[in-house]
Image (tube, rainbow, N blue to C red; front, side):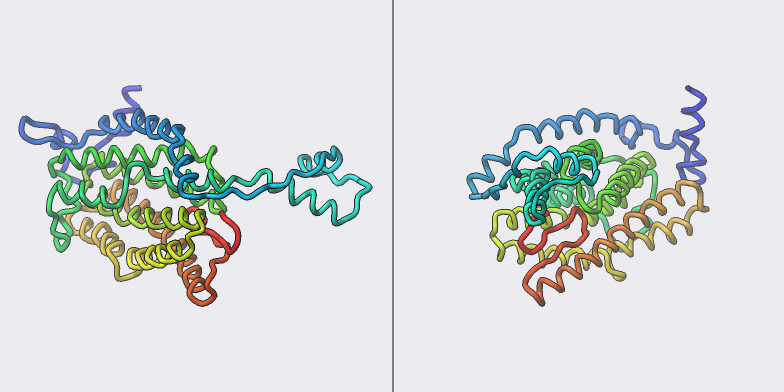
Length: 336
């Protein structure tokens, strides 16, 4: 086991040439990120999951006037139930219209309630918000964005606020992965799995090798629009459509600005691809980090294209049709 651990953490894999793990050992005056720091994220993740069972959002939804749709149950029919559950076509002596109605009622029984969607939209980022992201990172150090090498310098001291920020982010990403089997299944379920796992690898790697400044910027740009998106979904469930549409338009603009070609995201990619290669000879960690960054960037560009289409339909038709997005949004007359 010791040999496997030693092989896995070989500095040639993870650190830029000329930098060793010994260089990143703590001293009396300076603290550096250590991989074992991230182990604390697991009890924090369990705590965040436990918060979801407090059901705080349910009484809040009732207070705000959220109304559930009345779902009519189908009349008992063993033949149709067997066909529905087993996919076997069996003969039943019923009119076609009645069979269609039975299946519609039966299908509605498996759809998540509006209250459940409201709760998931509201608790999806506890207690992390884009404002907390910015406060943590700005309080740590007033970084000059025009000096790209600052963000890829591995021997920077660890600030306590950034340590707390990374723990919170890392724990939150783990809660997303752990609770996915129990949450409402989105249409882009597979893409979300890839996205969440990539986010865990990216944040964990950037912490362990002390790429914290650029990792923090990536997480801020990546997560900042989420608050607006989930707020818009909440107001959609409450049928505050004007507020929902306004937030969705602001969210769309933020997404477009964050992931367009001349954007902070493209500047970050330019820094990690070119500036890091100018300072250090490319190594495994260089390719690993940039591959994860590109994967996240591509996923967000794909989602952004769908959001732009949804925005166009909202502005031209006044309604949004069902589309795949980062945790599918909503449709005309139907919640997703």
